[in-house]
Image 1: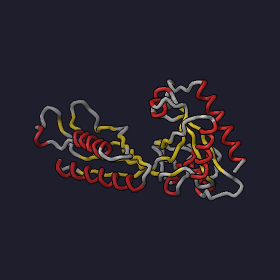
Image 2 (image 1 turned 60 degrees about the horizontal axis):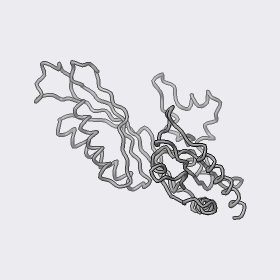
Image 3 (image 1 turned 180 degrees about the vertical axis):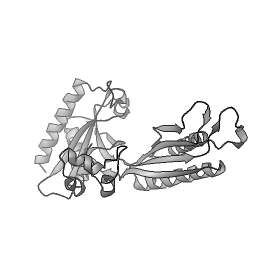
Amino acid sequence: MLVLLKEELLKSVDENGITLEEAVTKFGFNTKNLTNLHPRKDVDAYLEFHIEQGPVLENESLPAGIVSSITGFKSFKISVNGKSGHAGTLPMNIRLDAGCCACECVLAIEKVAKTTADLVATVGKMNFYPSSSNVVPERAEFTLDVRSCSQEILDNSVEKIFNEISHICENRKLNYTSELAFENVPVPCSNKITKIIEKSFIDLNLNPFYIYSGAGHDAQEMDNITDIGMVFIRCAGGVSHNPNESVSVDDLDTAVKIFLKILDNLDLK
């Protein structure tokens, strides 16, 4: 995925102390070209076709859909700090168990996401330290990924989630730290291009079904340069980034027809 790199992100380092700017430069890219994108008069539009990476189109029995907007997201690294002790000799009522605290936080995050429309939140990685079967964890680290196509919902939900985490840690007499690892704002697709895509669907007797993208895409960054439009193609089981990822030949054929019809309609604008 194309990413518009921010200055602070370029200064971030990996476990070997190498900055992102150094790594990008080593591969022959000019970081200035990745941080200063501006509208270009020589580019009329950007059109992207992509598998849906989800099950909606398959559930609707549709080969393709029109993307209305691309999600915004915030990604955090969170560390809960407690106190370690022997699993057999430390009574339950006086434990400062970072692992249990982190797990309670995860359930609170899930509850916020389930009770908020147009929001998803995921804890995809968690580690306990010192990571021993007979030691109460003194530290738990986990990731948090929060997404919405509404910036207001995204911001309000992140605030609510961290209020819950603070409350849980306070009740357990523990503390936590958090770091914003990455973020991107929601991007609506161009109304002008989307209407052309919709007409193309109708011209081909296809249902002009609208769907939002819960994943980031190149179009999200190309929006800095020109008008964007996206079409999703149905994928089996909604599976992506996996050896079982699959798209039917018939759906690919439909995608090509949609693409050619969009080009025809763009010429008529």
